[in-house]
Image (tube, rainbow, N blue to C red):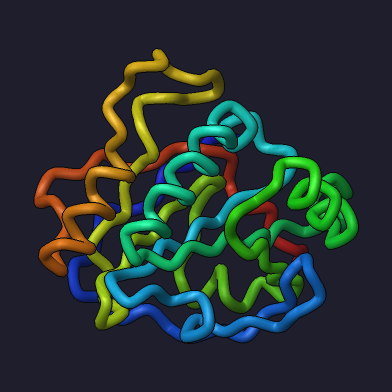
Length: 184
């Protein structure tokens, strides 16, 4: 089921985390933060919205890291109901796709709840002080990739944050599959 996150709550202070990465390390928000900002993405292995733009996510992450922006992805989906999103399958995808960023497993879903993650992909662009400045989409893509020349909204916003500490006033919310929450 498609979901859309809320609009950007400028200045919201991102809560920390400590999660296992697919490469065996445990990483905190401080570990993945960049000197000019941080991009935390909630993604997963099976969502058609993520898969449609995964190559673009990898491209933008690589270019943002070169600008001093730290990047990490988190999968919080219930792997019991969605086995494609298991830790083992996350490890496989990270290697197969050559992720240039850590891919973290939020098995308890505590981080996704603390961050109020709504969908995959859900992008959180933080400034160097760890304050939310972007909660928008990657680009105009949906369940299928948009045009190759689509405006790179996430990249442009994160570049602006790296340069000024502030995100764009106008943002279009991301859309994707809802987070697959565990049964209560």
